[in-house]
Structures are given as C-alpha cells and as structure tokens.
Length: 384
Image 1: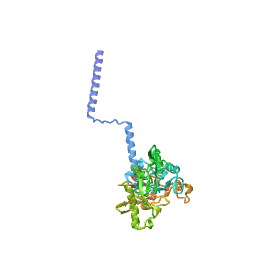
Image 2 (image 1 turned 180 degrees about the horizontal axis):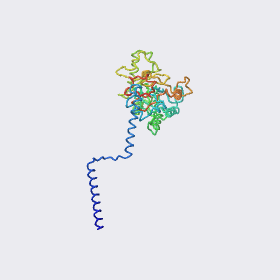
Image 3 (image 1 turned 45 degrees about the horizontal axis):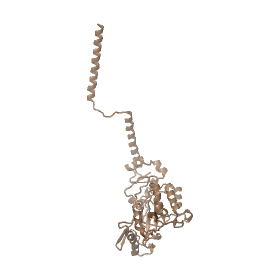
C-alpha cells in the first residue's frame, strides 16, 4: 500500500516537472532572440563611448567663439585626439610664430660667405635636435605646412650655384656626389634623419654649379630628389638700378637657361641679387622676354630676420627676409643662425610651433587679430 502511494507521488512529480519544462520552452519561443550577451564589459564599453562623446561636445563648446573656425567639430576632435589645452600651452604651440629662412653660399673653408662641410653638418644636427624640420618654400608660402606636432619649419636656400654646393667626383671610374659639397652633406643627413624632410632651394646663375658635362645630370638630380631651383637673374645685377625691360630680361633669361636642360620646369621664387628690388615691384611676379615667361610667388631679401608666418597679416611673400648662415665667431651683427636659435630658446613663444594638423592653424587667443584670413587656404583657425 505504501509502495503504491510512493509510485503515485513520483509519477505526479515527474508530470509536474515535464509541464514546467514545456512552459519554459513555449515562453522561449515567444521571446525574440537578442543575439548579444549583455555582460558587465558591454556596459563599460557603452559608458566609455558616452564619456568620449561628452568630452568632444564640451571641448567644442569651450573653444567656440575664439575666432572663425575655432569652434568647429574638426577643431574639437583634433584637440581630443592630439594635444590637449594644457599641452598646447606647455609646448607653446603657435602657428603665427616666426620661421627662419637660412641663406647659404659656399661650402668650403670657413669664412664670411662660406660654411665648412663639418660646420654645415653641425648646423643640421643642431636644428634637428632643437625640433626644426625642413620644408619647401612654395609649401610654406601657400600655408601648406605639414611638419610634426611640436616642431618648427626651417627653410634652406643656397645662392649663386657655386660648384661647392653640388659637385661630382670620380669613384671607380664613375661620377658620385662629393660628400663634402652641400648636396653631399644633405643627402647623407637625409639617410640618417629621414624625418627631417631634407630639402632646399638653389638660386642659380648661368654657371649652374660648374662642371659643364654634369649640368643636366645635376639639375635632374635636384628636381628628382625633392630640391627646388630658383631664380637669381642672369648677371646678378642690383635690380634697383635697371629699367623695367632689363629687369624682365634678367628674370626671364634665368628661366630660359634652366629650361634648356629642364624644358618644363617652372621656377617659383627669386633671390634678389644684393637684396635690392626693382622700382616696379610688380615685375617680380610675372613677365616675359624673348619668348620665355616667368610667374613667381615669392621674392627673397638678404635680410637678417626670421620670416613671419604665412597667414600673419605682416607676411609679404614678395619681401621675405632671410638669415645668414655663418659661424658665430663671424657674426658681428648678432643676426646669424646661432643668434636666432638662441633667441628662440630664450623666447619660445615667438617661435612657430606646429600643432601637427595641416588643416588647422593653432594660435594663442591673444594673437587672433593678426591672422590674414585670405591666406589661410584650406585651413581653419583654432585658438586656445
């Protein structure tokens, strides 16, 4: 009797369990599949995304109103992903700061117009270690500055096309670049410091570095390896004493000489002989003579100051000052490369320092009034 009651009880419990299982199955079929397991990690990720979005919105709000473009979403995103405001202050980021355009002549025994190969290499080492990076003059004039964040552009120029700037020597019966000429030093530096972006503009005369048999080879090497060729006239006269027609002949004549070897090459800038401008300054931009036309975007002086930034209201691309590259012991005017390097070490806020974003011009708020908006190109302004 007791055994029968036990069996009935067991059967009843089994029936109830089966009913509960079937009920859960029916309920499961009615629920849509989530396809996602909502773990603690999931909620942490969602929270992090929300915080990042809020951070960008806050930055966009606090940076708006500084100047045109300063409150854009792009500007806020750049701060969020690049330098924050504290870093901008600490690094003295200032894309309205001054830039050195260095003027070299000969490479040889040290003198007033000559830098030794060893000292030229020392110049490059020091500039690199002080966070300077080379760039092309045309990119600078057009405000297409793309140097890494925290670094400063520097421009190299060489006048007169002296043979010491570019010379070939024979090695095993083949012409090789003399490692002691300017190009040889720069090419070696380029190999060991690829992030320096080594480049320069050579302002040539008809001598075209000497060695007539290698003229075409040298010019092709320069343009094929990231260097530029500039105009330095035909006869190196002071343009201030010439008639308009003679000025045009000097400039167009230089273009014609280069195009004998590089038929499609267009010089973009001029180094004024002796730093003197013609009476009619409009002739520096364009003209033609004897079937040769020139169109220039920049004209360089023989000044002793850094250049203003390209979107500074005081910047005049047709009157760009340069700094003489000479040994400190010969710098009687205290206006050469090393004097200005020391000046920027002592006054870091005066130096151009890049934010690393080629589409933004980042400046301290108090400098916003100095911006020439017409020279911004594709960039927008960000203040801090």
